[in-house]
Length: 233
Length: 404
Image 1 (cartoon, rainbow over the protein chains, first blue to last red):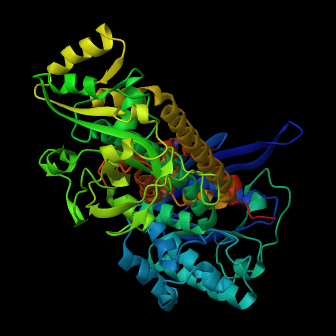
Image 2 (image 1 turned 180 degrees about the vertical axis):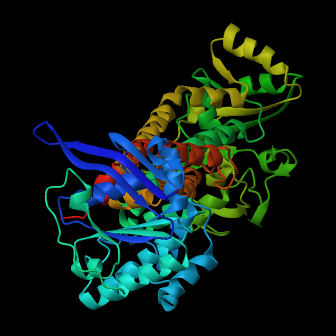
Image 3 (image 1 turned 180 degrees about the horizontal axis):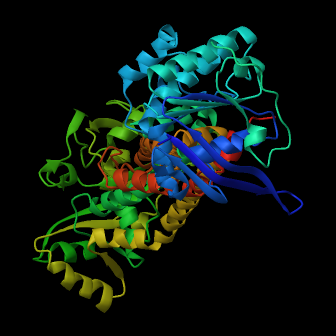
């Protein structure tokens, strides 16, 4: 059984003019436990909405999202919050670190909503992503690449079964993007977490063996991103 | 634990607005607690402050005027009573002691009161406490000598051997004005220890000295302004009250003194109710400023709140963190309010002591120290509900969208 099973997932938003605008219409999508897959999707293909639906931040108009046997779309909001805190790690394009908190606190804060803050594990993860010497630095005191690493550590803090990454290299230069992507893939593999990345960055997509086009997957998508020839990292 | 970290960091991130809001609450709390404590302490102290006397007999007037004049050395004398009437009072079996006082002069605003030496040698102004001399001796009844209360001595710079000429009247208009000075010269022969009573503000001279002061009406030379009365049996007060106040029409018998003072506080009760109302209104305004400040910062923190939700924070956690932040801001203010209260009370106590000689204790514990800060914290938490509700309803997906 796949870790993530999506069937007939639909989501629309009402436009300012009134009519409903379909954003996500995915008949089927599966992801196995521990697998790593990239979805190619530029703006307009509903990639962030798709990830929000998987994470339970948004609820679908129709269809099901099943994670590790639990139907996310059928859960009430507190249960979805709990599931997100315990089973899903989320890496955002803009990192979304809390500026008033140190690196360590950012990671521990994520933990506190799940199994509980574990200072040792938080420090260990930051050490793993190369920030052992910057535990008490604030995000503004770090480079964008370092901020991304904090976001990676935070996403893995609660031993998630699935890590979602939305354009994780979008704000990084090519060198940092390569390093960051490698780090995300390595740490997900070390933590037995499946990885689902959505990106339109050819460098990212080229690094994955398994790449699918979100435009093909999502019948509501309006544009498509070319899929590069796969290369092994 | 993380909830407290969230609150602490948020307070620090919005330090200026936190401090301004807390200061507004501190002022409201300080004012509220001061009004409350001052009202209670002043009432208690003034009601218990009877100088060791049970009653005052004076010319027909209000009891309050008589007590303020004879016990607190405030107000003017309503008129005189003759020595024969004093004798009648003193001869009553239920009366233990009568001390006459006469007034009508001052020295630079401090009242000069004529009396007899037994006020200092025999009378207890509080149970077991007689007036004690710090310097010198008690005046001689037949001489132009003065015994000065501690506060008056300090303010006037009087010491044993100082000579002075009394001014006519109870009020002193200030240096260089047309104050009429008597020809009689008095010499200070003693200074009293502080008694924390209105007696500390008085320049005491022999009764005959005041009665016979040059310029006073010789026809009234043997009259006194009032008689301070100590009863053998408190129940005698009822009989004397009946005799002087209800059956007679020449005198007023102010008894019991504490009740008379209580009537004063009842009369001015509206004033402290207005002050308390003002203080509560200030507290409500301060709570509104908590609401406005946190409501605005919630808008600015939309992204942070959305991140917390995306990390798995439940709505109720976000709600609680905002309410707790509002309560913490109020708690900071309430704490500072207690300090402001002590400063205001110390100032008020100084003024009361200067004006009346009555000593208030700003450090006397009061329940208001607990319930007022508690009420302010509760009010602050209540004010936090609106911004907390706003945070509760935040659209996570919209909050996470990259800022353009």
